[in-house]
Amino acid sequence: MKTDILVLGAGIVGVSAALHLQDRGRSVLLADRGEPGGGTSYGNAGLIERSSVIPYSFPRQLGALMKYAMNRSSDVRYNPAYLPRIAPWLARYWWHSSPANLEKATRALLPLVEASISEHDKLIDRAGASYLIRSRGWVSFYKDERRFAAARTEAQALSAYGLSVRLLSGPEFTALEPAFAAGSAKISGGIHWLDPKTVTDPQALTKAYAELFVRDGGSVVTADASGLSQESDGWSLKTQEGETIRAREVVVALGPQSGLIFRKLGYPLPLAIKRGYHRHYAQNDGQPLSHSVVDEEAGYVLAPMARGVRLTTGIEFADPKAPANMIQIRRNEDHARRLFPLGEPVEQTPWLGLRPCLPDMRPVLGRAPRHRGLWFNFGHAHHGLTLGPACGRLLAEQMCGSTPFADPEPFYPQRFL
Image (cartoon, rainbow, N blue to C red; front, side, top):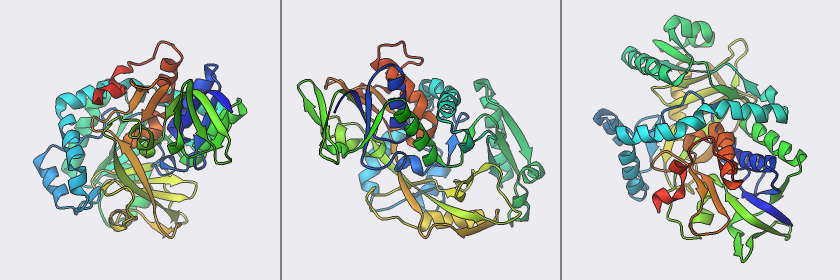
């Protein structure tokens, strides 16, 4: 099995890269040990997040740091036994979250965020996947009046980025989402971000893109990426069936599993894992959820999806291989039930996923400097679904010698070497 390019990882990032490379005339094989979209791409909040122009940074306010240190927050939780292992990475994350460094990350990511909707739209149209997309934006809401006032100011400041925003009073929010009116907590107000789109089944969207890739002549194979070998004229990998793939170039788009390759090849990239959970709940008759909503104070998302209302948690710092811990999702569920009539859980146990994160809040995207034909595309943190197609385009333009639509240098792996 010979191909120009072997893409490792069939999540939204890898599938998008494979499509863009294929569109530029390259023969491409897509390899994963599971089905397309079955890993991290399965478990997100389903937001194509055009409005997230400021990356998620490490809190630097003393009050926030003290709150998280108590480890009782519902939006961020840590396993105390894991903290010594992750502490050096957290220190780097804190340093990169300074105002100057955060502005640097924002400038670098902005062209990709701005292209997120248009790049998805092209693939959605070609894949016939519009039935999975809602163009209603999403809504952040606040219970505390002071938090809402601060959020209004921040939202108005983001108008410079060309975002469409609607400010909602408490009654306007409950008019938009009437089921919240019966909650025991009062909603002070909300912000309706109108530009983003939402996805009712993130895995189905990734599968639709993968099916488009196959219809256009690509192949998807089952293989364990850890078996990748460098040859004199390229790279090789055995499939699950025992066939050998030979490729001139390889793209590592394995998300949280990318360390299987870059660590073996000697690249000390500071990829860390933020764990996150989701669970689906039945929608009660006559009390639907029409928009994806974010409780900004408790740090969870409620999203109407194909399997019910999906509740997604914030961040958990724990050993990536540790079993699921129910503490955080129970805290989030308790918060949500005070506001919205969640039905019974659809799954017996929550889904646990891994978010691949770099301390400077930017993915690693570009040529590996010490190995010919090796390319990286991973570390998209909370925004893999949002940035997958735009990053796939930026990578393909570099690999195929086209003029990149955005400056790729801020994403080069050399910044950590």
